Structure formats: C-alpha cells, structure tokens
Image 1 (cartoon, rainbow over the protein chains, first blue to last red):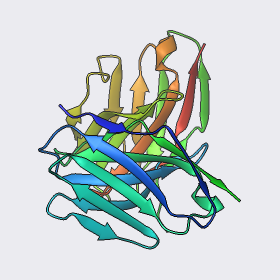
Image 2: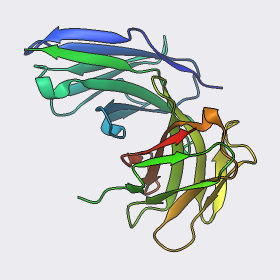
Image 3: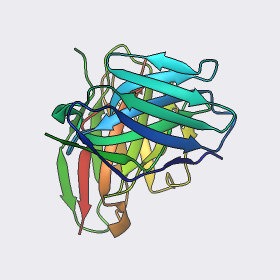
Length: 111
Length: 112
C-alpha cells in the first residue's frame, strides 16, 4: 500500500521569506504526486504536480522537487505571502484512480 | 472557471439515519471521487467512479456506503445508517481522465 507523511505539522515563516514543506512517501510505484492547499472551510486546491519521470517542476512562485531515491518530495514557495497561509497536503497517485494524502502541514505566515 | 459544487454545506443527522450528499462535478469530466476528512486528520479516499460503475474503493467504503450518478450532472454519496464516526467533511472531486482532480468545497456531516 501507500502511506504518505509530512515531516512537520506546523511551519511558521516571515512574510517575504521562502517556505519549504516536505513530504515522504512509501510506495516506489507511485508515479504522480500533487501538492494541494487547503484553506479553512474549503476543499483542497491544486497547486502543482509532478510525474515520476521528472525531478523538478516550477510554477508561479512554487517549485516541487522529487527525489525518487529517498522517496521524498518538497514544495518550495518563494516570497511567501499572508495569502499562502493554509494547510498543505502532498498526495500520491499510483493507480491513476485514487489519491493517498499526507497528514498536512500548516503554514503560518507572519507579517 | 468551472468548479465542483456540493450540497448541502452542512448536514446534521441522527445516528442510524440515512443521508445523501450531493455533488455536481465539472461538466465535461468523466471520473468522480469521494473523499472524507475527519476533523484534524488527513483526507482519505473513499471511492472512485467511472462509466457508471465503481472503479476503486477503500476499506472505509463498506456496505453502508453507496454512490450513484442519477442523471447527467449529479453524483451522490449515500450513507444508509449513519454512525457517530461518520462525522467528517466529505469532499467530492472530478477529473477529465488526467491525474488532476478538482475538489468541491465539501459537506460537513455531523452525526448526533
């Protein structure tokens, strides 16, 4: 099976700093990974994804890094803003049909 | 921008009662999902649905749960006899067939 875990439950950063949120997964057969942002009272919102044939993917202010050797992925947020405050989940997909979510990291941005 | 919608936003029910949670997926999507999130815990997969049948389901999705696509737009989750431990946020998601799943805002189910 697949388990996906987060290293830190809470991350507090200063506005303008970069944030790094980490995630580990267990199933080496997982071939697709997603980061979701969840604000209070809302559903998960897609941020960025990466396939297992890549090790880095960049979006607007966000970068996902994938290290398949140690089964680890990270989400980097550049110039963190107050609006980035939320819980961030990584999720893994190895069947093309179901997502396995990590436990979530709460990002708190201090002004 | 198209989005997944869910109703109701909050459902309160008595233990043992049946509930139906409703979802309207994005219109051109073909794959539909239900997830749940118990307060303070991670999101858990329940079931996926494609071509009018269940394609995957988790251990959580036992005989008390069922899904249906009664018409061309709605996707429902029914819990036949609710238990206290069914209290959670229930999220519907849909996808076009690629991996990206779009989530609805969720229905908060409270079982008393």
